[in-house]
Length: 242
Image (spheres, rainbow, N blue to C red):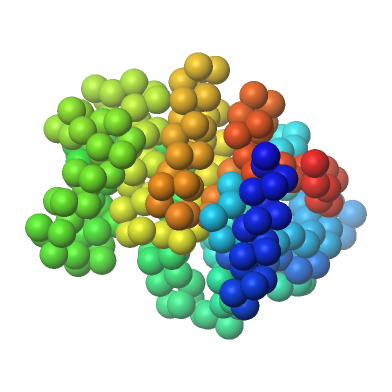
């Protein structure tokens, strides 16, 4: 079924003349110089159509986070080209990249990244405040997102009053606040037990379907890989598809 969905998504994108949501072409990224240099990525290429959930697996240090940071515009490649919905990241400059990350990409991290002094609702509303959204629009969007992730009754609680799984759900709701086209998640279940992690991954799967979001999720959990449309594996800086 996953292969069928992937093929259908690709065919739809091609038929409509729409570029893929993510295109990575022959990307290289190294850290350090000389004999001590670490070659995190060696000629990585991939395409992700709109509306697809792609899981990225690989051992610790395989380059998963490096690839996510490059796709999200948080880092730049040494060589190669990355486009998001047809936009070449190399041509954006700092201001353009900032706007892209603010308006088009949502990030979910292993450590949740919530502000402890804010309530769940206030945390979700942070991106909307930064965008100077109308207060009524902001409140409606926050309420909708908390309901989407099953936390409508926890809006007034602070992160310290929530379980790890609930905090990650708040983080997912916050990542969706500005209605991004692309969701990037780096080991989103890494700090959760197996049952809670599976529930969070199922939520991501549901969000991709209901919100029409494209998602690239790095995970080492074999149980979670089955929820993806495709699985890509990084090893020694190169990419293979399963």
